[in-house]
Amino acid sequence: MHLPDKTVERLSQYRRNLLIILAKGKEFIFSHEIAQLLHITPVQVRRDIMLIGYNGTLRKGYDIKELIDLIGKIIDTDEGQNVCIMGLGNLGKAIMKYFSGKRPKLKIVAAFDTNQEKTGQLYAGIPVIHIDELKEKVRSMNISIGIITVPFDKAGETAEYLVAAEIKGILNFSSKPLNLPETIYLEEYDMVTSLEKVAYHTKRNKQ
Amino acid sequence: MHLPDKTVERLSQYRRNLLIILAKGKEFIFSHEIAQLLHITPVQVRRDIMLIGYNGTLRKGYDIKELIDLIGKIIDTDEGQNVCIMGLGNLGKAIMKYFSGKRPKLKIVAAFDTNQEKTGQLYAGIPVIHIDELKEKVRSMNISIGIITVPFDKAGETAEYLVAAEIKGILNFSSKPLNLPETIYLEEYDMVTSLEKVAYHTKRNKQ
DNA sequence: ATTTTATTGTTATCTTTATAACAAGAAATC
DNA sequence: GATTTCTTGTTATAAAGATAACAATAAAAT
Ligand SMILES: NC(=O)c1ccc[n+]([C@@H]2O[C@H](COP(=O)([O-])OP(=O)(O)OC[C@H]3O[C@@H](n4cnc5c(N)ncnc54)[C@H](O)[C@@H]3O)[C@@H](O)[C@H]2O)c1
Ligand SMILES: NC(=O)c1ccc[n+]([C@@H]2O[C@H](COP(=O)([O-])OP(=O)(O)OC[C@H]3O[C@@H](n4cnc5c(N)ncnc54)[C@H](O)[C@@H]3O)[C@@H](O)[C@H]2O)c1
Image 1 (cartoon, rainbow over the protein chains, first blue to last red):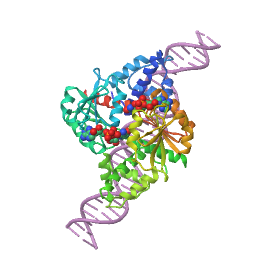
Image 2 (cartoon, rainbow over the protein chains, first blue to last red):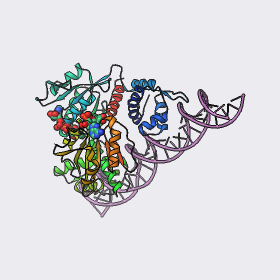
Image 3 (cartoon, rainbow over the protein chains, first blue to last red):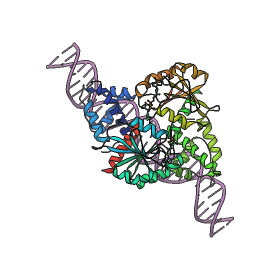
Image 4 (cartoon, rainbow over the protein chains, first blue to last red):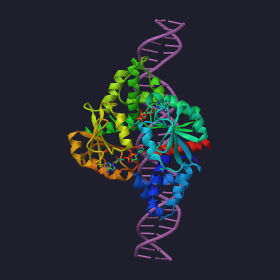
């Protein structure tokens, strides 16, 4: 089954919000209710749900629990995936603290750094390991995803290490565009660009 | 002049990379060189540059300095814009440290928090102020953009404060979708969704 | 029992974004 | 000086994504 990228993004958000609603005791939900939560249109919601092959009940809506489970089957693997942080700096640390226990099927299990003052200890309960051990640890700890939070000019080599360690996917927060083999999935986020986009639109509103 | 959103994003990235190249002493650049930097196609680059009304020289390419200046005229205001951080937590702090001195025309000038143990001091040289003073400070410090880094369940009220303080644009890092008046530009980034997207594609590659 | 209402599922259309195609012309080569 | 090469600028086409339209139908109302 092929899903559009944007649909995958929304599925993640549907699930997160549905979990909250489920915890409140609600069992069924209409497309327009989901839409209101995320500020999108009900059609969009129905279309996404159609694409994953789920069926709601007329006049009753979607079974929240079933929908959550199905999204889980699409996004997660049964055993879950292990993630590592590359670069235990300000951002890396923030992410480690933030993620701890957040997504049961996506666990940050290690951080790698070159700075020997940082390695060899725990941060937020997670081992901080020297990058020389990357390849071996990626295998022994079964890590499939790497998050890059090293400085701009170190991002390229860090990506190469990850590739050599046979990681499967990378989330890159350094604003350095990476060049990876096709087999590795790459997602990039550039905060400065986001802020400059806001600046551009804010400026336009002013004028 | 109307620019597609994606073009604005790329312009930000063109500029950032061109600044680095300019510093190295290069004066002119071809579309395929820019394309290679960002791993996009040369056509995309030429099209973007066409859209902003700039003209290169045949067989010589684009004047790097001129292009940087023009992008600046599009994204920035002459005086620059002031930015505030809402919520001096792990992420808020990381951003403040990271941004200091990074973009001359986009300055983080204040952080706001409700926690009295955090307010009344400087962080990374920037004043941390109690949120009760938001409205007054936004006016007196001429702040036009707010970055939301408060917890999920506080994001809604924080956005309302910003709206009441007549901010012009918001960058929201809490994964709470916000509902704002049309006049305010909103950009949202959800890190968990990004990571789940990587997880989804990584899973597919495995199978 | 019939009609109305509300909601899903799906196809059709529109919008945005990216890629391809190619004419025009300057520089380099012959 | 003629020809080839390379690169821009722009139009044409394709792909991705969002919205609109609407048939189907279960439940509710009459
Ligand atoms: N801090 C933010 O809010 C923020 C925002 C947007 C983007 N970023 C990006 O994230 C990255 C990190 O930012 P930061 O503020 O956390 O920086 P930082 O300087 O605080 O942290 C960088 C860390 O990477 C480590 N490191 C350096 N070289 C390394 C290597 N080759 N291998 C492994 N580790 C290495 C350093 O020891 C340090 O711990 C930068 O690329 C930055 O552009 C940060
Ligand atoms: N830390 C990360 O790496 C990370 C990653 C992705 C998203 N986020 C999002 O960013 C937000 C903050 O994350 P964090 O890890 O920095 O959290 P945090 O708990 O470290 O910081 C939250 C800060 O907000 C302040 N605060 C609480 N209520 C407030 C209010 N009403 N007004 C102003 N300030 C208030 C708190 O005092 C605290 O300083 C969360 O919404 C989280 O979802 C964080």
